[in-house]
Each structure stands twice: as structure tokens, then as C-alpha cells.
Image 1 (cartoon, one colour):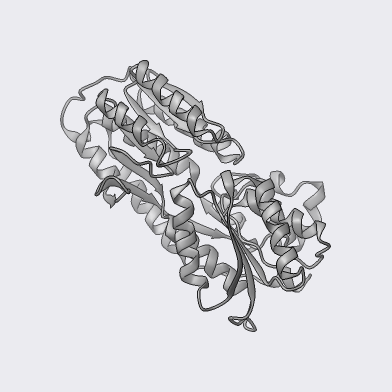
Image 2 (cartoon, rainbow, N blue to C red):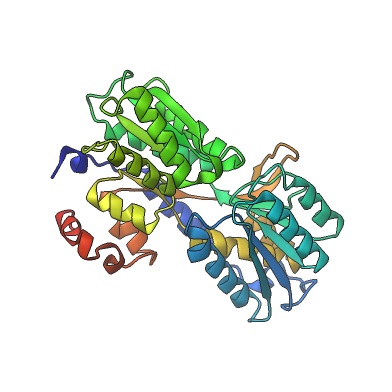
Length: 373
């Protein structure tokens, strides 16, 4: 086994996250009648779900199907989900928002392509009497509620993991490339802030990029530029804000002839990334329970439409600020650092993937080496 594969960490966030998840599950187990009052609307409701893009496999694979199934469960199969994906186009998403307003849906759950640009559409929905719940990314405008993960914690976990992966011999002269997410995504700014809180003073940020539309090919081009400037043998590690970009970064390193890859972070626990973690090509990812986020968003949307205020307030006990509005009711879902050490306890135990999904013939030997079977 290479020294790269032997570098592992165990982050205490996992244990804290599990306790938070259990507490959250207890809170969310309230029955529909927990408000003690009849709902203002019945189960025959229409919920719009607008997601931002398809480059990240999570949206089609997890968010939409789990959200749809939960709405059906909560409404005794009478609720309808109108789904649209903007495919990374803010103008297309604005058109989709207008269509949902024109169709007079009961509530819109929105994951914004461009949090600022969509603000006018959110205001139009508000004027039409349609509540908007910001999903995963905090859109501007009069948002009724927000559900996402603790994004600064995501960045902290990534940054801390990268520093610890460098080992005891690391110092502030070690050069790091920082591959941040899209500048139009407010989450990317929070990931970056969290990561910098762990990286500053411990390593040197030799090159930093804000990657347009989170696209792996853009990350690959940025990384090729960084390699040219820094030198392929002078990069101690790479902060990648998500798994898709990590794949592009690895392609750039491979093309430059780097055989001993530096530790590379990620986020989203995509199957390809989990397999790269198994082989040691990628050091870690951040595991976020998309089913949990999607299901809780569905609960918030249905409670909001049906006027179950007590249940809605219980689901959104936190408060967040956007550039346009303050004290927005919110729920922040916990996260877990995913490394070779806890694949079985996280994505496998939660039913994200089966071991057979991960350990295909190509990865069978690597899986055996780390005891994943």
C-alpha cells in the first residue's frame, strides 16, 4: 500500500452528526395532527420542485425521487410534484419559476442556479401568494424558509481533512491549490470560508479558482493552469469543493504525468468519488444525506401549504440571513467526513450504495485491501 493510501483520519463530526440526526428524527416524527388544528388545505396539493443542474448526479439520483416519494407519503398519494431542472441556466430557471407561478402551484421548493438573479422571481411568487422554500442554496428575495447542510462546517471538514492528510511533516510552506465552486452559488462562498478557517496559516494557497458552473471540465482547465504555474511536483494537496471537480483535477494531474497524487478533497459522495477514495486517488469526500434533506424539505413544504404552523416551526428552528432578508427560518442538516475508514458505516449503511456497487471488478482488489466486502 502506498503512503498516500495509508493516510487516514477520523473526524469527530461523525459522532456528533449521528446524534444530531437522531435528535432530528425524533423531532420530525410528529404526526400530521400534531398542530391540534385542521389543516387549511387538504392532501390534494401541488408542490413545485426546481433543481439547478444535472452535472452533479445527486439531483436526479437522490433529491428528486426522495422528495417526490415523501410528498406522496405525506399526502396519501394525492399530492402532485411538478419537477423542473434548469440545467445550469439561470434564465431557464426564471422561466420555470414563472411557469409555476402561472400554473398557481401551492408552494415552490427552489434550488437556485444563481441566488441573486432569481430574487425577482421569488418576489413574483410572493406577490402571487405562493410560498418559496430555498433548498440547498439560499436564494435572495422573500424566502419563507431554507433547508440545507451546515455549509461552513462542510468547508471546515474539508480543510481540516486536507491538513491532517499532509501528516506531521506538513508546514506553512506546503503549496495548496484551492478549487472553489461557482461564484453564483452562495454555498460555494460558505464552503470556501469554512475551508480557509482551517487552511490559513497552516499551508500556502498557491493558486485559487472560482469554478464556473461547478463543471469538472472547468476545474480540469483551472488545474492544468495551476500545474503550469506551480510545477507538478510542488503541489502538496488540492482543496476541491466537490467530487465532480475532483474528477477533473485528477485528469489534469494524470495528463501532467503525476503518478503519486496529492491528497484531494471532495463533497457529495458520488459513486465515482467513493471508488476513487477506495483506490486512494481521492482522499476524502463530505457525505451529506440527500434523502434526509429532500424528505425534510418535503415535510416543510407540505406543512407550510397545509397551515400546520407548529410542525413547520419545529422543522425550521434555526435562523439564517440572506443579502436581502434577515432571520429566515431554517433547518441545517449535519454532515460527515467520508474516508476509506468509514465507507461501510456511512454510504453503505444508509443505503446509498451497496458494496457491490462500489466494489466492481475494477475495484475488487482495492476494496479487499481496505477490508470493504
